[in-house]
Length: 308
Image (tube, rainbow, N blue to C red; front, side, top):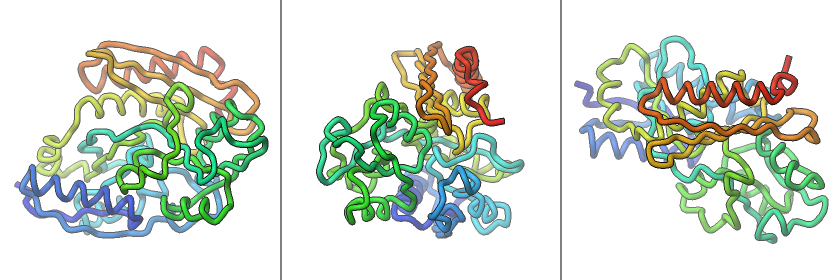
């Protein structure tokens, strides 16, 4: 029985909050004592280019996976939206925790909503998914790159570099910064990315004892919803270079999945949207729902939106 482990985590304030949250739950619910191993990833170091140009989501997890492989840590805590759809051989997601608010937040010191922004206003975001959806609502906006951890992004806004920025609501709420949110985008306006707001716990695939223990922390509705969302991205080869959104919500025992795809370069092209729903009882049926959504997007012409 596992009784003491080390958690690998990025060193940003939000990442440490997430790791400490898991650390507390391990102790309170599983009787596992955990220490933290803070690490800086390449994704934290490269701030002058968008993720789509320097290697994508994997830049935030590779160093943590190296710590797992070398035995310096037994568990890595991630924002699930940062986890690639295909994990390297030898690693597995052992648990997905209950999701926080999955929506995107509009943050501004001078304007209460996207609609209030003046013509040609500068909005900060380095997410192609957000860029394409923002421009589908307000094609007059100038959406400029914005990298760095959450505190860095807020500082850049406060220094006057942007009229507004768009951030994940979950991170702001977890750090007690909900007061910075001027408004939230309902999913009908801007669809979140797969896994947004959820935490994923990654371990070595051969650590059966820890996998069994962490299974008690799984929030099944969030797990299945995220499995469906991630399956859409996996089916379409999703990465940071693909402006793809996928969000699943429960209506009783039915999982309703919405997906949207924009063009990475030609933002004037219309967003492709698909909605599917099914009774989902396990992870395979959740993934099948994601596959169905991807097939619907392909039927709408997604092939011409995909790179290569």
